[in-house]
Image (cartoon, rainbow, N blue to C red):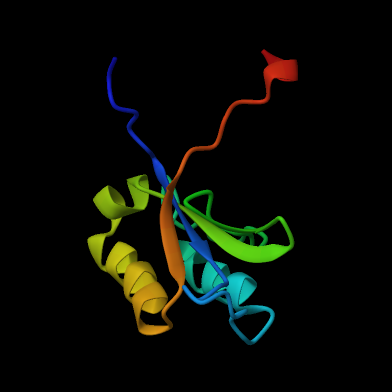
Length: 105
């Protein structure tokens, strides 16, 4: 059996001791900063949106950011920025795998 290759990491708005990270909109702020990094680069004149490589979400009531590993190849400094943000703020980081929606297959 082969080892799964995770394409995403999950940054949770929790510290290892279970405390919630503040401010409460940290995930949206981080994803907003990263919004310019996207496949094909930023599109001039387009509406502002999150990058598909760095998306805020809520999982089990916890604010999180899902970061796709493709960001590392596209812009290593942006990848380092996201990981250092998590490290500097003592946030829980784990491998993450988004499963396809089986109803759409």
